[in-house]
Length: 177
Image (tube, rainbow, N blue to C red; front, top):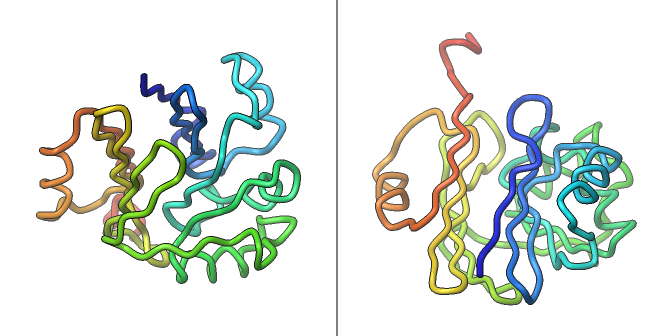
């Protein structure tokens, strides 16, 4: 069975967990480790059941704890080359990721982590190389998109093909202006 929980969504921090009986993945790590530990405890989760962190983009509210998750729990961090560059220069990430902790992905090229077949796809956002994720596991298609500010044909396709969908859409260019 595929399980999902949102630990936080919005400008104060984004973090999502998706898992099966064989392990899980964390998508974004914009909450502090202290808050994540508290939430894990409240939901009966342990860090050792997770195999990796996927990152959607390099804004602090999505990456604040990636360095700590990699260092303290040995979790590799999957992101595009552009997002990894953004993580390396972001002031909020400490400790910085070491080369062996980084896993480079490409948009529209599927990869596998445990039970999960994952494909990253382009999201329009004011960040470096923002992606959404389509994740297939347990006969289900799960799709997660963050900071969606513009609906594209690709997003329409992913929404239509998903069994489960998470959309976080608080990005608004007019509000930013």
